[in-house]
Image (cartoon, rainbow, N blue to C red):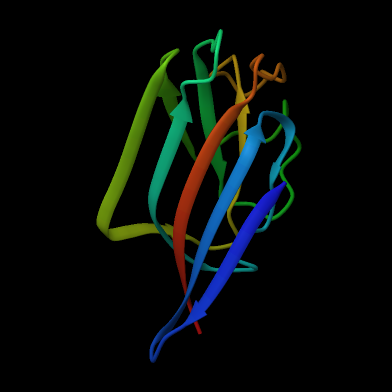
Length: 126
């Protein structure tokens, strides 16, 4: 289940999402609700018997997992915590969606077992 908080500032709406038991084709779809930037991603892959996985991010509000090419792919080794940040942000035009899978290729559709916890922090212009 995703926990999403939206915080309104003077210039932007900040979106903080946390997905626990994260994996498979569900993922978080349309996090930003449109164009904006994402600034950080934290991947916690330390659950017992964790296996290496790939977090795929899409500039797409409803990607077809296994068909839609991801725009960003990040590797998370088993029993690792990964943090990716950018001061200037990564621009998305359509929306931001994500998924955790065991295959980095576009065709991959297998979820890691056990699932992964991941936190993504994004900002969207008003």
